[in-house]
Length: 193
Image (cartoon, rainbow, N blue to C red; front, side, top):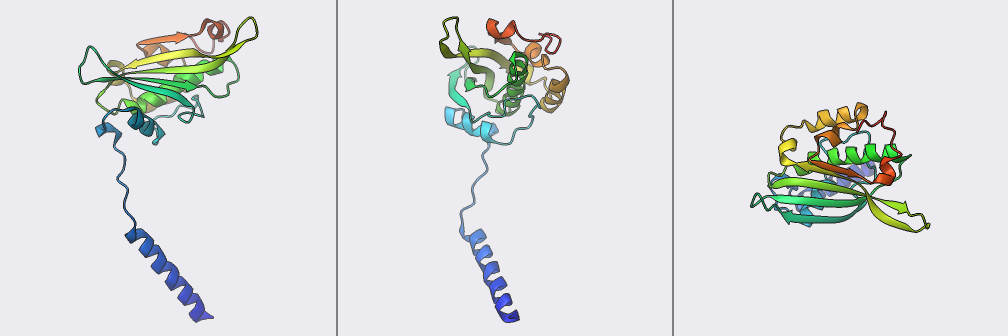
């Protein structure tokens, strides 16, 4: 019985060693040194996030509907990234605004590690119903972050602050938009836009 157990352990160890030595090692993805393409942006967003606020979209980045990479006209060689995503489940309009802001922090903490990124625009899409009962997917909120702001930000500190001050990211943003149908129901005592 002892010999059988020793034989099984020996075979298991040999198999583990062979599996570790025979396979190709995958090179780690280096977003900071990558070319900026739709595929590399998506891959970067799938990596572990340096800063993930409590209030952010839990379905992100799986719920991305479109990514666009554009040349920055003012700064040749630099890129602007546009990301459209369908927002996940939220409690109300206030929660929606908090989660969009948190998702923007998460995205900025990743994408601005690549020095070729000049601007990131995040478009949170949500299902809206018009006065006739027709539903459509529309941009519920947009946040635009610039390299200038990103260079001043401690993303982890900003993510921590987002819990107590979810409007801060909107104040730091180069530009933001919240759909009027959403904005009129945001509790401004909770998110001081």
